[in-house]
Length: 235
Image 1: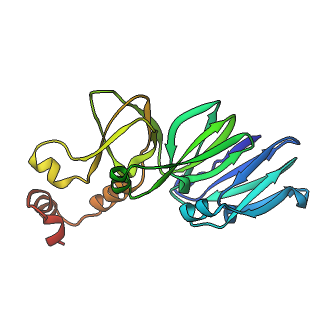
Image 2: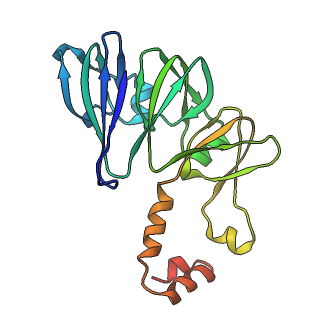
Image 3: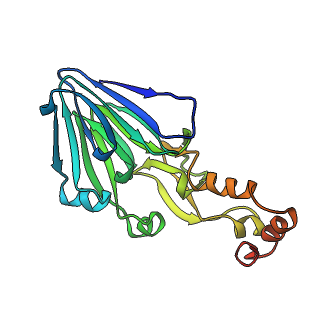
């Protein structure tokens, strides 16, 4: 299977991805409503209901399966991109099923129920763990990069930036820095363990920066930052 990112001059618009499948290829699309064009045997697409547990996690009912030689193009909304990951054998990484856009034949998924503490931190009860040989596509917001975990030295990460993390990781809710820093930051994950965390550079951070740049006055910005709860009382 070959996937082509249809580049355009407008980097802020919707992103299109063309999937080119050969005779023995198979791919499963979790957001079939995003498929905008298809070329091939009409019988090459077969939609089916998701399992009940995955319906609940993704809040979607339908999965589209594409088999055999065909070409189709899927579009992601503005601000979203697609990160393709090649898997071989087992993986210790846990993903949010809602961010999964596709997976190929040869990939198996297993649900992992989080510990109660981690449920409260992530506001999610179930993560997905992949195994097998193939490829998955994760919807992202912004550049994707890795940060290494250590057994003793913690990594503080804004929860909205995490795409995936190892099942062995230990998570604690925390802030860091001095009083002013900790007072004005969102809660972070304090993470230790082995392996790496997969992060995305976009999301809520980008929106806050845009709002900051469009703000109407230096004095108001200073007061919002310096006064406790200033961002609530000073509009």
